Amino acid sequence: MRSVFIIFFISFFLSSDLSAKSIEDSFLKGDIESTIYQIESFDKKDKPKNIILLIGDGMGMNHITLSRLAIGGDNYQLALDQMPHIGTSTTQSSNDLITDSAAAATTWATGKKTKNKYLSMTPDKEPLQTITELLSKRGYLTGVVATSSVTHATPAAFFSHVDSRYKTKEIASQLLSSTINVAFGGGIKYFKSFDIDKEKYTLLNSKSDLLNLTTNSNKNLLGLFAEDGIMRTEKDMPSQLEMTKVALNYLSNNSKTCNGFFLMSEGSQIDWAGHSNNLEYLFAEFTDFDATIGNIIDFVTEDQETLLIITADHETGDLQILDESDTSVKVSWGSKNHTGVPVGVFAYGPGAHLFSGEMDNTDIFFRMLDVLDYKNTPETLCK
Image (cartoon, rainbow, N blue to C red; front, side):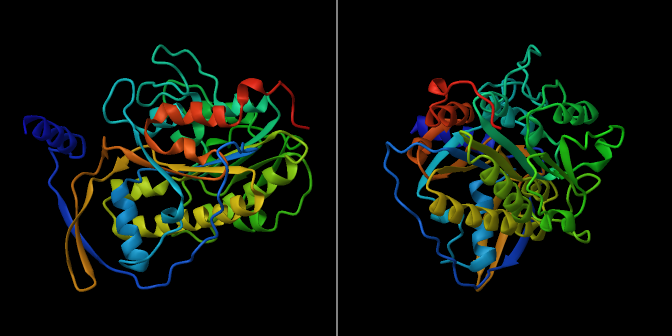
């Protein structure tokens, strides 16, 4: 009995901001039909050629549950719900039970724990090789997509090495000198002092540029669509789904004669909605995120050589269900900060079975390299 109490207390402590007063809110359940996706079975011996890592920043299992209800109601099935392999991941950083996005993203990018605010550096400020740097030397194309700025913590962990996520000018400079082939997001203001090499990059600055992209050039793509984060309340801003579709099309077409591609796409503002305790904001961002998942499920089913992995860096907001009355659901926000509860891991495609069960966030890095048979892949360049 004593051990059960201790486990309960630790779980409560990690999931709660004890100094904050909870805020109650409510929403109406949705009532639409589910879109059912074709899900294929893969043999455990199958190896993927490509990996797509989708991040729902701040997305706890509670956010998923409430978004499901808000979008479609009790019996609705999200695209995320149809992922055949499910696990959980612990999230602590090297110096705190409550991670930030920089330290969490560093674990997926490098397989190592670091301090909060550090990006792909050890706690002693030694740079760590990222998965995009490792794979680019093995003949892979790589890309990052985010609804934040491309210099924000999660995308930045895949190409930069700094001891503060707030060194945005340095992060922007490191992106321009990196091996990343596609970078889409916001952050125009962080690149204004740089003379971007137009021989290296095709530059996209608007939603129209993105959706009308027809170039067959093998130049890298750099899309900066907002001064900072991409706010859907502003006119003509691309969604995560639209950016990810274009990035995926570019990477899949240009890597046909290469070993494959790696793409990270983040629904960044699920986290921002949690920080602001805003349900409407949360549901709008999650709807875009789940539509992106559905599109990639279709890609995986058709392609047969791509592994899709979905996870989160941490939970934000300590969001809980309190009660329901007819079609209204009452909830509470227990915090405006991150919490330390485990998050979900979901996978589909060849190698997906390796992402079931309980794991640490660092395990995701090593399992991605293992499933690609990285150690036995010779060095080469994707031309």
